[in-house]
Length: 278
Image (cartoon, rainbow, N blue to C red; front, side, top):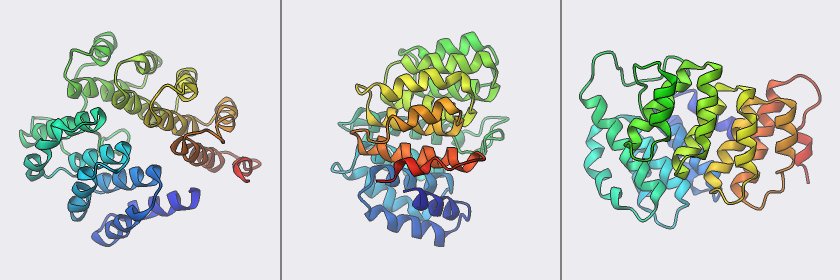
């Protein structure tokens, strides 16, 4: 999995139709983790050539919901508002995470159709990613946290609060994000874990560890917590990841493998990837 992810990152770094088509071919694989990452990369590449494939994945009820959700998110990230009509029927999908992702993608597409002043539909200037929602203009951490954890707020607004807190990147905002890991909904929790991985602050290790260890959480949350711990990469993170090498959930096991390779890549010394050998 380590080598395959490295190959995928190379293809993502060369955004063109040819590399996108190679990524599309890999959807024949049986790994939900890999397919989820393929969809994510196609969204980040804004690969319009992949739109038909992403819709095929979204339509496939036999596909892992985590992969279907990522296909829906990619369709929002690509930024073509003509897909809104085709996305709309999936607002009634039987899977909550898919429904919510479709809602977010439609809201994102509509937001940028209106082209509000000061907002450009492109990579975030801090993290160089195309996010599911743009940040807000507020820097009131207490108010942003209140929005983030409020189940009565629209999900798109909660996501906007999340990415605003991420961009503030102070100890206080990081702790606010970490506390929100106890909020409702697997989709939001998985995005919170992803954001904490982007920030790479040791302040988040305790809460991420709790999510990884909680087998009652959906695999999409646990897998994202594992990868976030790999991005943070402290010694404590390594120890926690090693405990989950043989996790019963395949997507978590594979995420631990990827996370440990990230730690290995970012540190000097003996490789820890040897721990995952049979």
